[in-house]
Amino acid sequence: MLDMPRRDFMAAAAAFAAVTTATLAGTKRAEAGDPSFMNNVPDPLLADKELPTFKFALEKSEGRVIGKSYGKEATVVQLPISKGIAGVSMRLEPGAMRELHWHATAAEWAFVIEGRVRTTVIDPQGNAETNDFGPGDVWYFPRGHGHMLECLGDKPTHFILIFDNGYFSEFGTFSISDWIGHTPKPLLAKNFGVPESAFDGFPKDEVYFARGAVPPEEQSIPLQGRKLPPQTHKFELLEQNPHALFKGGREWRVDSTRFPISKTITGVILDLDPGAMRELHWHPTADEWQYVIEGQVSVTMFGSHGRYRTETLDKGDVGYIPQGYGHSIENVGDTPCRVLIGFNTGVYETIDLSQWIAGNPLDVLATNFGKPAALFETFPHRDVFIADKDGPEKTGPQRP
Ligand code: MN
Ligand code: MN
Image 1 (cartoon, rainbow, N blue to C red):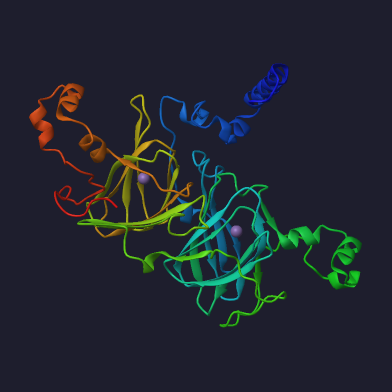
Image 2: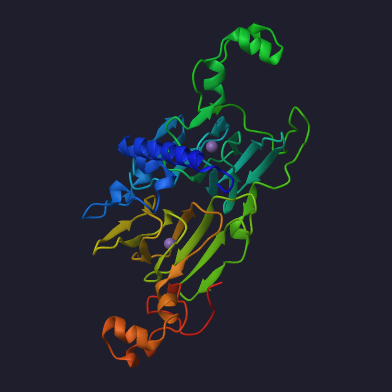
């Protein structure tokens, strides 16, 4: 802008205004999906007197089933509030492969719950990596990078995928069989330098789950030989020590500071004992997507203007908290719970309510609430993060 003559600046400003007007006059969907409006214009879905539901029973949905493999989605179609993050629960039977594909509009992050998975992923520099994953492991594929996922071994595998875009699925996921099946054979023959007949009998439509032999235990070498990327796509999350360890619960966390390729997604595993809770807090820079792996939790959400909503999430349910909204997670079941949480940021940030209060002097708190200063002496003087069923620890580890 510094060197731009004023009339050019005015023309640019007018063009920008026209684009802005067009966007505002567009459909509700396009408007809400435009990140340039985030934090400026309220999302219409979040502008009513009541907060919308933020829960979806993912595992109770049918999804896409082929043989004994399935993919169940939670996108804006199933859970309209979840504009920033989508999720998929996927099960692959032995010999099944989620075929070669890419996501034009989202990066993919995954956590393996059960069984073993092998992936290959290509990057724009032509590097390819093959990795084998087991329970507790995580992968990350940057937006648009081509990949496949296959079940490894003779037992089925189950994993949860997280995408940094609630609109990732519809018209955003591209499969290789769909593309080749719709391209004329002469063009394919020229592209690959093989006879047209080489494409006889290829699938006409998207295969989605391909089924074949169980892959060899030892990783096979790609056609081009091995050409590895500078950064790995694999991180063994549950092999690490928990990030946060409290009486009542613990948390493992991975963002780009520990897993450099994961620039747009942070993942968390949160374990809570019965009655324990992840305290009231908010995330300044990210939406939060939750999936209950085990147990039952009560999730609260505060949305300003007196709006407050509580949802109970059971095993297999998904929850969603928009960026900046206050929330808490409490284990209300009789057994320990485990929640997988994804954030659409590569650098995790949180502000916890106890920490905020501890960051203020007594006179401010006394005036704010109209209560004696002495009362606030009894509040925690540090971050609580996880409170046990009997309340927070008064001593012990600080939040890392
Ligand atoms: Mn994918
Ligand atoms: Mn949170």
